[in-house]
Image (cartoon, rainbow, N blue to C red; front, side, top):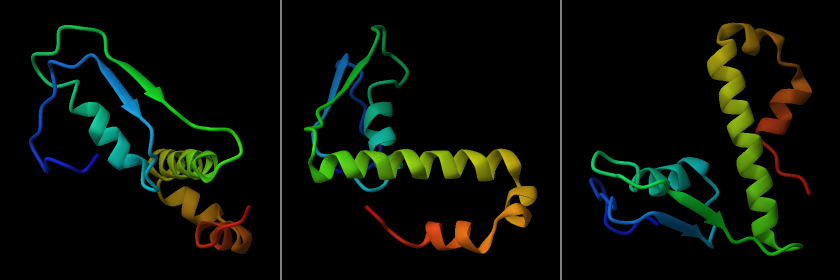
Length: 97
């Protein structure tokens, strides 16, 4: 996913297959966005291959939690930070199953 560095355009592709999820969902978003550059004329399909009961399934849930937190903070701004409890802050910096 990180191969090729910056500026890589894959507009000839119309399918993205993610089979090795990253802890950081933004890395995956960047990989997908490489197919959505100027010049893309096709609908792009994205497939995530996740096997039930594996660590990848847990990573996917962690990614979702990160996305939700990011959206909440961006949309809520300072009000979100003021409303956070001690337990909310602990959850941010811990990992549980």
